[in-house]
Image 1 (cartoon, rainbow, N blue to C red):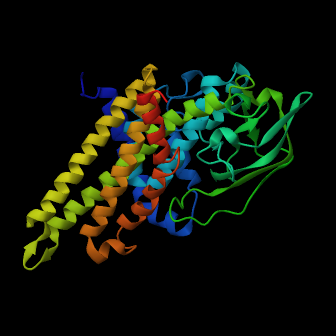
Image 2 (image 1 turned 90 degrees about the vertical axis):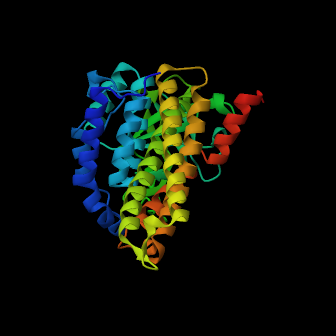
Image 3 (image 1 turned 180 degrees about the vertical axis):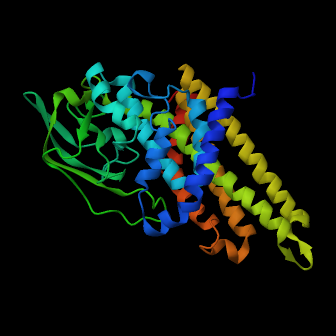
Length: 379
């Protein structure tokens, strides 16, 4: 085992870090408070290769590995956790088209996704099917050269602003085998959106329901064969879980850095906070948990890239560990800031609001435990 990053990995990690510090961090509070979707900044990120991180090069992608992506997302999340998470979702949707789409679909959709001229959303969750994703009800009925869609998707990042919606629909029997994957383009007849959701965090990316009412979608927009949609959706989530884990680590690392600086400067009872042993131990634990979660993430990222048999379990482990640890570390950093941590003048409270949802989305951490335990016990 070699834990040394290559020169190339260090180079794009540093590029992501510099971009996060110069283009994201100074604007993150404004984006949060104004609920601004930072289109120009996203396209600047895409110009660096972050719009199609593991999409193949022939359509404009960067063709990097899952470990490479984890390095990038950890750095971007230190600039703005919410915006980095949207870039993750966009990349997940683009990869699904790249990995399972035919040559025509790849050529039509991916060049503009890689530049982020077009934005993408991933549409699996419905009002009545969250963790039980295989019970989804949005139906697509074949009508000549089109499918006609009826139903609704819930909690969709980019809902109403994205140009491409990668949608899981029911084309056949109940359960996972009856699900197919379609690309629905903005402006499709019968496509509409709910009102923007009012959320605790993730305010730099809009979230809304995506609604289908006799929505006509060309059969040519199907990704993979009929009945393969659930497999495609789950494969996408393996990578999405790695990315959201990396975003949690980035948010936690950002807060820990700021907390260490604060503890070196802040005095109580005539002593720096950094000199109280009880607080030193807390920082030691946070740093240890962060490093352990990072190593778990890197291991899982390697497994997903290599297609190892246990990759899905490892991705679930990494997601569960990193998002739980990330939130706990950020919450602890807020506590160490005292009352100041609760103020918007300090960014820790914003990161706390942003990382909280990571324990819910891309499969809740309870579902991660289901995946892990079933894999171990054979249930």
